Image (cartoon, rainbow, N blue to C red; front, side, top):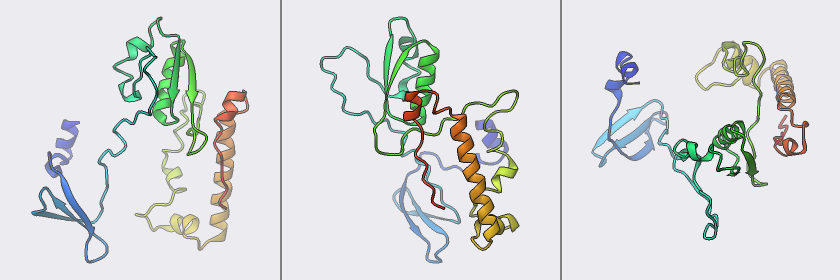
Length: 212
């Protein structure tokens, strides 16, 4: 990572061990003013990305554990406890939560022969869409990361013909094609997830809301 940053000139643009004390919109209404440290240094930028890791701090629910001898830990610590949870001494594991880290943990546990109980609250966003890998040499994420697929997603930094045709709202045919594509893609992904295969899988099916 350090070598990459050095080679492409990223390292010289990084301010290490620095805090941001204030952020406001510049008076021109377009740029951002960012005050560094104690506020004595001002930085003005065209684009501002907040990447402070606000969701990286583990949140563990209040689980009564006074009478329990079972280990309770966050998936962030799964690597530390991997040898323990995959050992023959552990038969059953309960995973609380529906995030992507929960899915990773469940996959690891199931492939190691553990019986998993998955606890997901009824409200909220539910479980992320599950997509099985495609057969052969093609991966299920090959198309979503292709250049063609990028045309189907609106982008604030593009203003080409594709944007006008599909995302501007000024082209009825483009809007209709976009809606039909995502309708078919949604149906395909739900079918690929095999949610009708069992009663438990059916509980994980996402609630699709058509805003068209």
